[in-house]
Image 1: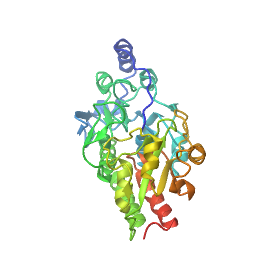
Image 2: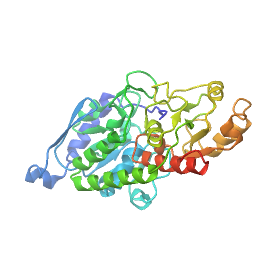
Image 3: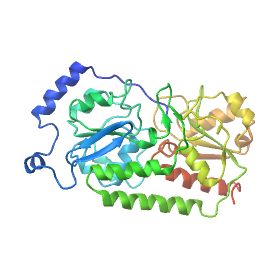
Image 4: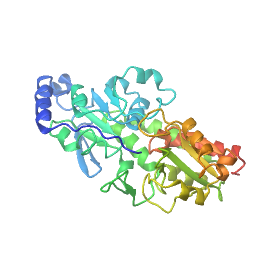
Length: 346
């Protein structure tokens, strides 16, 4: 997902935060500390090249990306969340009540000051760039304060984030990366059975959505955001999962960049059969909402004569459904239904 930069706290401020956290008990549960480690703890994970150790079930977690937030809410952990941040869409259906009880400290990436103000005992993110230089703050700065951090394995397994932009896939993403995140977060919070149940439900939904479908020979283009220099899906991220599950083709399956910026002239030359359009509620780029995107497509001289535009073959997805999250399953369901509706899938 195209990133939104925010200030990074200096070490001096982080040191001040350490004093605050220490004075408040470091964000840990006092009773657990007095009694020693609870059953099943400490939990130690290998996460995106780092070792993460959690000594007790988090009670005051901050999730700084929407995808991570929706996993925690789906696991029934709203009462253990101090705050959330970085939203591109309305919360997933069914989670509205739980989400309403968790403070949102920023619609975009928060400053590290705001995160530390919540006295977190655990910080989770969907993207490596969120907890890195140029994001909220590098992971090691929070870890120096004794606050464990976690990044979705779907954003680092088989992916190179060392360059600019949103990284490049060295191997195609699968839903296993998303399921791994669910299982690991459930383990961190001491509710592994909830993780098992959530993954089972997600697997069942994918199975039902794809049963008997064959969209071979149908080409798709995924447009996340921006009309001037559009962010379009490369081969192997979450849109690759959707496309692969349905047997369709991505017109830009020849690029491994997660969200390359590609000219509309190139898009028109490839002339996809269907446009999968991100319907975002944020206002960070031009043409975020689906309505604005469609308005652009139908008025721009380069795009208005594309087959998909002339026949209005649009499928609308939330931004979260186009990222590697539990809502990628929503993407599989909606694209499958859309292709069937257009008569482009058996």
